[in-house]
Length: 404
Image (cartoon, rainbow, N blue to C red; front, side, top):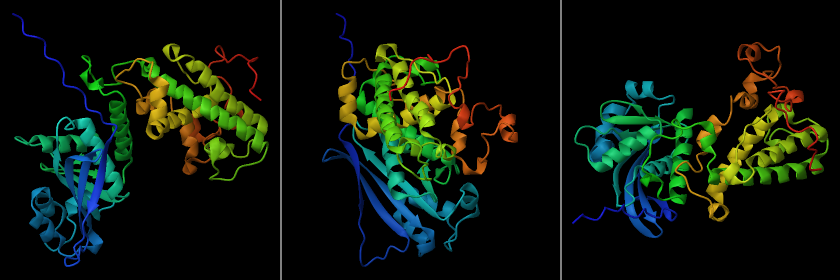
């Protein structure tokens, strides 16, 4: 008699998962630069795990070396690597991070099945770092040495996922001054969100790396395309409203709205230029068509800028309006690559030259006579050229007109 095939355990519902940060301060024991935080991992109101964090402000600390050592665990391991017995920062720490001074030590992870999953733990660590640090912290996490327990392995992999650098055989450090950890945290959040919205993605038989093993068009899964189209339609509506309200009025730096989100060199453009920019959102929304047939390829600089804004808004939709997104895609097939906005931002463009126009230090880069412009082979960055097609043989229909 053949044994029945094993069935995969049901995937957990992650939609109610959250964290609660608890800090208890004893009046009889002044903190002096060391705060002890307890992070509760909650499924609704039920605690399903926890994490411990030592938040260390070196400039406020008193005898921080001894106090960390006394707590044991990773804190005791980290103390002599981060601090001298006199309480100074070690040369190794000052060399390893951009702005040595404050640090956060994370350890004592516990998490119940079925939430003992790397995607979940990495998202918890990323959110804890976001809540307890600023741009000048070294976040200390363990490595997974030989014989490491499951919790340590989860913490160590979370560190790697969040762009930590090896510090020594026992420790990894995330330098919050650097751009890579911020980018990694966004990607970790997107992966968790995808997992929450499609719980069975990790059970796919072919679960290889994404998106390196696929072409660019495969990024636009039906659900991803549907959210992108909604984002494009919403931005188009807002842009046309602003065209009517603004006319030829110049915008100040820091202005809000769609046109306030564009690079500074566009702020003084007139109503006709703004109409052309508003139409780029309509054009891209039309490209997305029905989700089953969607494809998008920006054909000019204006459309590249519009697509960046569309992806940012789509990311916000999946984060801020998950119920609306769920209703939008309810009848569409799910895919393990749904809502991979980081990959969309990377792979749906030939280059990201237009984003360099936001950098004040590169003022004048749009000028074709600019040395950097020529060295990098840039094209159509001057605002007069934003709507010139990259490929003259594949222009938009010149008779398609404007919404207004």
